[in-house]
Image 1 (cartoon, rainbow, N blue to C red):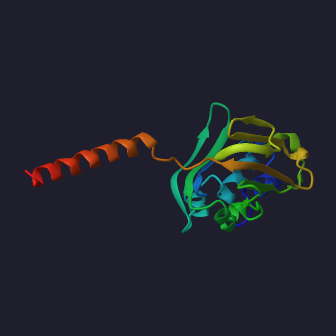
Image 2 (image 1 turned 120 degrees about the horizontal axis):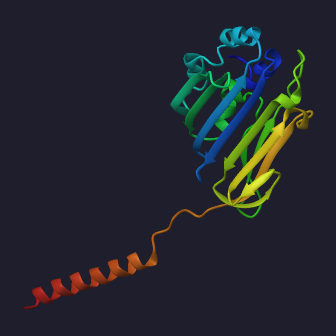
Image 3 (image 1 turned 180 degrees about the vertical axis):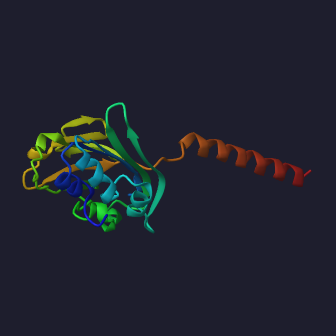
Length: 218
């Protein structure tokens, strides 16, 4: 799979396509991502093309997301005959969000986290436009991006937000020539050792020192 997963799917398949990406980013820039893409094929042609592309082949998907900066936790591919859908799922960890741009699946995504003013961070990802050829209706192509950002959200263009969880949902015809999803946040402070621990430690130290001195002068 040398090209973007969604581009290949949309150009060659006539079924309903769905793509969901859930990403959790930690304060140090590392994190984990879960991707679930699936389609409902409507013809024998769809099934043949799916097999040829390897998008729903476990070994092919595993290879697509293998790198020195990511660690795959799980890859799952299966068919649900109850509703004639085929699914692909990938769950992996990464060292830094920016490094994912080196994966073929994110070649045009321009994933970044940049420093902003007043100790803020600016996250962004580009959703590239996809040509809607071969009679494919763009309303049959849905995209969902969910991000858990490690800080207080100050500004964003998400369609939904709940604390530090941001959701962007689109149909293909809403993307136009491309769309940036972005958010500015102030990172959470690293967990600090509670002050009472230092106080107790100091008291214990004073007691030990006093005891040692009292033993010495007896």
